[in-house]
Length: 442
Image (cartoon, rainbow, N blue to C red; front, side, top):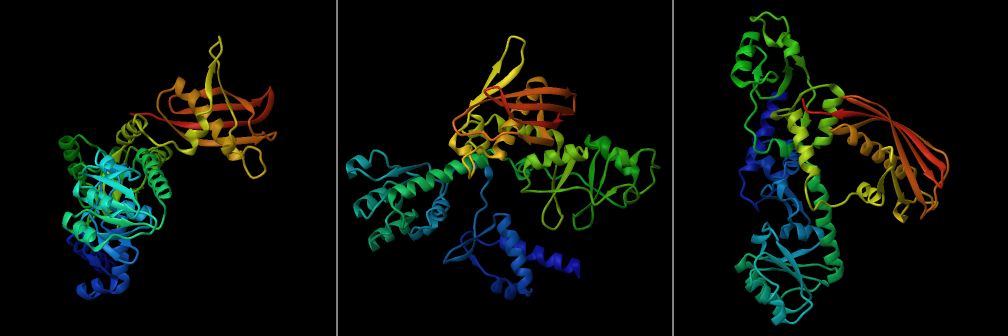
């Protein structure tokens, strides 16, 4: 029964993948055409939405969309704009997936406006029909603010040009702020690399079957250069993992099902590489199988893959700042003549809690950042926080200057322990004892 349900799920997923972009689908329609229950159809549509194959739009329903790759995550499309500004498409539906290059505020005369509008732009303007027409003729989309609509002629021109005309109830300033915020958030997401990005262009991973022998495994090691293989069943689902530790002193004729590690740790395509790195360090493993919702193998990632991706993300320019980055940006590193490191900075309004004093979570974050900074100055590699014992001794007021003094108690190739103290005018505010694991490339 379970295999039959899995097969129906795959049939529905393939049916959705074969649909043309823009075509509407529904639970009832899929259930009727493929002769499955509505529950099975609903689960498959949700899975397709998680994979980016379909998207549910207000007042329209679920629609097949083209899957967008995350390496373009900092670039918006007209469809994204519609969602951001709670807009309604008046015309030019066929161009919704066109990427945008820039935004133009239409607060100028038409002659001046022509200097800024070109193909791939989005003109943000009120109910100015002349500006609407000019933008479409120049290859630009139009976002009409203030809840105004476009004339029938403009809608027909938009359909013919395949350039969307969108209306939003918000004013121009609010719309521009909302779009700017969305771009900023996407820049932050650009830094968050997912497992999906690591396996995007990789070849299908080499696998073994449970009934193959140790002798077969040895041949695969010689031919591929790898020593760790996922074990899959006839439906390509991961059921085990085989490593040199499992094969040690085994007879070449022995089958792998008796030696493999059953139900191995796996990750999904939407898992962040930071989570994957933590799992690898914590469990002491070198490779992780990547699976979909049905535990079918999508790829494998290694410790080297994760490390390279983390190093790449840290070198990326134009990354939006997270709250953690903003808090730490007010601190500077101080080194005395003996080489001891401390960090000095001030408390900003964003760091305070409900009572007007600094939030305990902020203090813990600042001490963790200071500890990581001093560890990285002595030991290269990415860090995973293992444990933190924090003691808050006195409340800290707004606009005060503080000094954070980290003291490395112990550091090795894989492990570090740091004592951190925070002072205000030589008065101890809080302290922490942190331990971290160093993620190094093998």
